Length: 89
Image 1: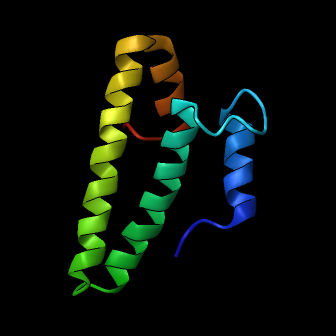
Image 2: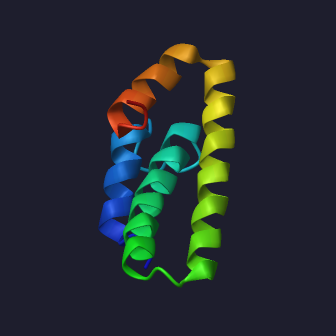
């Protein structure tokens, strides 16, 4: 199940520069992270859903590439983002 419109808008407002800034890397990573957490719960519940698991792995790879881009361009923005999203332990 996809993100609801309200959840997506709240993430855009929180991580973007304004409410219409959906193209920023930080916003895209936040949206991917929300979808990844939903798909993770789905995969825990439905263990035989192999296509769902494949979609999850594709999203994780996409998020990893975007995080690498932010890390290369602005290390401080990267550190703030992973701290707010709780990605690293």
